[in-house]
Image (cartoon, rainbow, N blue to C red):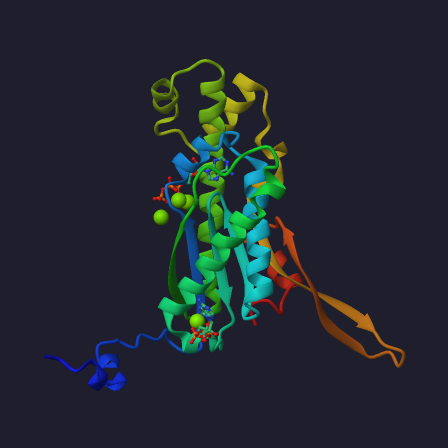
Length: 256
Ligand code: ATP
Ligand code: ATP
Ligand code: MG
Ligand code: MG
Ligand code: MG
Ligand code: MG
C-alpha cells in the first residue's frame, strides 16, 4: 500500500515540462470564440456585423489591457482578439500555458459580466468559451506583418460577408449567394455591391472594415517648468489602418 504522505513535490514536478517562450520576442496571445457561428445565431446577432457584439468584444479587451499591464496593443475582429505583450515581459516567466489561460479566462468572464450592458434585452443562453494560443514574433517587421495579416483577413471576410448577406436578404438562397460569389475578386464584389444594392463599400462603418485596435493612450503633459512628461492615461479603442506606416509613425512607443 502506498503511503501518500511520502509523495514528494519534486517528484510530481518531474513530469511537468517547463515550456517557455523565446526571450526578447513579441508574444501574441490570440483568442477566438469557439463555435461563434452558432453562438451568433442563437443570440440573434445582426448579419453580417452586429455592432453591439463587436463593442462587447472591445470592452472585454479593454478590461484585459487594464488587468495585464504588459500588453501593449490588441487587435480584434469578429470573435477574435490578438493581444501583444511587450518584448521583455516576464508575465508567468513567459510560460505559455499560464499566460494564455489567464488572459483567455479573464476575457471570457469579462465578456459574460458585460453582456447585459451591451444586450440589455437579450438573455445569455449559454456560457461562451474562447480558445487561445501563444506565438512569438521575433522582429519589428514580423510583428507588423502579423497585424497586417489579421487586418487583411478582416477586409476580405467583411467584404465577402457583406455581399453574401445582401444577396441573402434580397431573396437568394445561401447556396445561390455562395455560387454567385465563388471566385470573385475584390473589384467584382465592390461592383456587385454598387450595382445591385447601391452600396459604396468605402462608406460602411470603419469598425466593420478595419476592425478594432486597443492601446494605452499616452498623454503629453507640460509641467510648470516646461518639461514634457508622458503619462498613461487610459485605454482607448480606435479603428486605424494598421497595415500602412502612418499609425505606427504617430504611435512609435507602442512597439518599441
Ligand atoms: P471555431 O470554433 O472554429 O472558431 P466559429 O464558428 O467560431 O468556429 P469563426 O471562423 O471563428 O467560426 O467565425 C466566427 C463566426 O462568428 C463568424 O463567421 C460569424 O458567423 C460569427 N460572428 C462573430 N462575431 C460576429 C458579429 N459581431 N456579428 C455577426 N456575426 C458574428
Ligand atoms: P496564485 O495567483 O499564485 O494562484 P492565489 O492567491 O490564488 O495565488 P493559491 O496558492 O492558488 O494562491 O491559493 C488559493 C487561495 O485562495 C487559498 O490560499 C485561500 O486563501 C483562497 N481560497 C481558495 N478557495 C477557497 C475557499 N473555498 N475558501 C476559502 N478560501 C479559499
Ligand atoms: Mg478556434
Ligand atoms: Mg471562432
Ligand atoms: Mg474567428
Ligand atoms: Mg491561485
